[in-house]
Structures are given as structure tokens and as C-alpha cells.
Image (cartoon, rainbow, N blue to C red; front, side, top):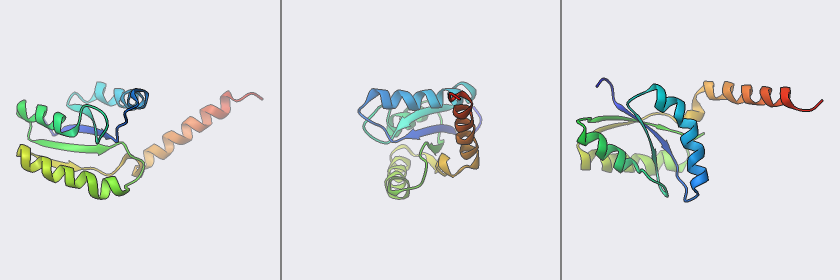
Length: 124
């Protein structure tokens, strides 16, 4: 297997509908990147710990966490890096934290496309 396991990290919620939204957003990536998984920071399963534990049991020791967050707030500046540090120690793995997807200009273009589509569908 080449490259690290990709973890698409969402915040998590006890509301199953919220999680289903992120799973639908992740579906094209999961279908295209056979080494990708979804994980939740809290309040939902699977956790990052579970996804990393499964990867390590498959012989994977390198992971890249891609946060499905619009910006780097407290969770991405403090909580997630602390979680990653603990997970690296407990699983003898290397975990890289990528910037949140909201920092990528492609997301801005996708939002524009959605808005343009909405305008085209609006009643005249």
C-alpha cells in the first residue's frame, strides 16, 4: 500500500443526520482514494483512535488527517494536535495534520458553483 492512510476528520455530533451529511460529502473521496476513512473528533463513531488502531493492525504507520473544518479554530490549533500527539505515542504512528479544507481556494470555487446553480434554479 502506497502513501499514508487519509483520515477525513469531522467534528462529530450526537445527531445522526449531521454525521450523514459529512459521510455524503466524503463519499466521492472514499470512492476515489482506497486508503481514506472518515473519523470524528468527538460525539460520533468512528473516532480517530479507532481508525488509527485499525490502520496499525493492517500494517499502516503513517496517517494524514484532513480536517473537514472551514477554519482553524481552537479545535484545530489545540485539541486535535494534542489528540494527534497522544495517538502517535500510543500507536507508534506518524500522523500529519493537513490544513482545514476551508483554507483551500478550491472550496471557495465550489461554493461559488453551488450559489450559481442556485441562482439558475431560482424562479424568475
